[in-house]
Image (cartoon, rainbow, N blue to C red; front, side, top):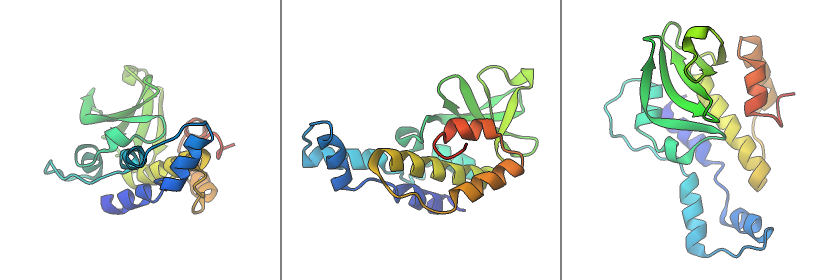
Length: 181
């Protein structure tokens, strides 16, 4: 999957004006047309090629506004940080854990912040394409729960395949509690 395809997938889950208004009215909040547009713009993932980067992960972090949009509880950094010459850290989860690309095999891992040398590293995706697919599923799931946007695709099949291929079921449960049992 290329980056523009990923962006298109994420942006398919932007709630409509009506869904935003319904969510606010359920809490007895009126909302102006301008505020609806601002909310929709805040959800929009945009490609903003600034850096001359080669890899997908670099382009995701440096050439999009993903750190502003966010995906679930994943908060992306402004730049990729090298840790122990072994990991390229690019996001955190709940401020206690970091997502990183393991340079040895390009797997996406999650580890407790500052504990890279302790060996408690879990695989969250076997490669960047699988990680992008996971981000799409997280976005779809979150927006389904909040705005009733329909779930798409064969989510359970994809996640079960990932688990069979070594991805941490524990972490998939934390990231997608309503889907992974």
